[in-house]
Length: 173
Image (cartoon, rainbow, N blue to C red; front, side, top):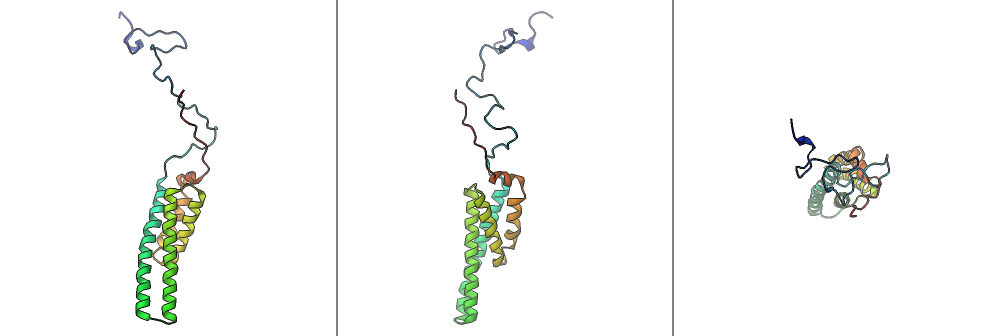
């Protein structure tokens, strides 16, 4: 076999220079870019999570959906209670129960929106309390069980609400 080895050619099909420490092509294509793996993160610390986990999105959807459904049912229940019973203790009890259920439903909707817009631990706690209050709506028992499981047992959700290290700006030099 004569001529240069084809596996030792640079990008211009010229024989590569095998000078130690020098690239095998005339110019480095990565000039101006930071090498992978070299950043300002501390070893042993978790990597920053930059995408909202599915467990958090799922918990938010459950809260919003059950909050809307329970809220609509409470509005209907309030209208029926005041129309059928008129005045008296029975009507007052039904109206109070409907208002409490409606407030719990609105709180669940706010908790779901906070999960979609905020990354704070307060959003997770608010959503958990809102899901616990949905037990007063009877239909919200699913959210009462599902939301804490999604937010507090999934590692991805825990990492989302944990303190995140500062991500260094991209190297432009």
